Image (cartoon, rainbow, N blue to C red; front, side, top):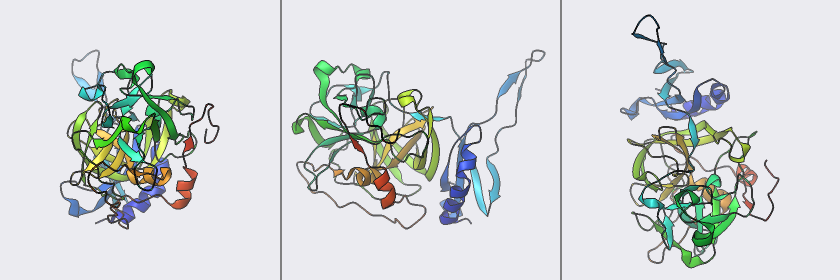
Length: 367
């Protein structure tokens, strides 16, 4: 039986080569058999089915090319399990959504937010001061920023894809943003927006109410829940962690397909990450603690690509905003030393990922 440590070390060695293969979208660490967790760890490879139907002109019957096997040959005693998945792409929206697209004041987490051009989700109300009293919106770079720049951009609620206009629905503007990079690995797609008035934001999460803090760690197999602008109330299971993925950003910031390292893949029984769900925050099933930030997903929406919210808190020096009533909990550590759990970012990496402050002109760093 392979250990999670052994699987993680193998993934680190082979990820670069695997991601260069045609049709492979991600590689991470998960369970060999999700129905029998005690069977140990495996490398999880997210890839196209690689089976196509070719119609014969002379025969009505179709012929299929060999399908990708369920398992590849084990390496160093670690099983390699294939999970069929469409490609991964960002989840900002220019289209229609559900009931969480309406205008709401004060703004709470789970509802549409964005720029004049697109909509995503206000993931969480956070604070950048030690006592948790200031209020900011946590969401994604591609939800709150102007084309991957640090230029001032207006924040609308609802976002532009949901009828929001700068004249009537502007609640604030971009405050800070982490730049997305083409030539180096990325770790988080994150930005914050600052409201014109503190009273425009309420530190509450749609449906679930107060969020009393966040977790620093979660593990493979954990059950999570969230509310997103498009999919609404959904639940999912952490299928893999330490997952390196290729995410298609299209023409946003002229990025194309870029690499993210050590992400979490969360699977739903129905779509959990459709267009407009970018920025939505996963909560723990018990306690409503913030756990992970959704920013991308498989084309069919069944998989959410998310990063640990602890990384956002580290990089932005933030915490969950304090609700009007109720006490705040200290960040829950979990079993951070286990390889089947996500881990905080090293201090050196946190420093290299520090966000930039929005300004009238675009910043040139990390382009």
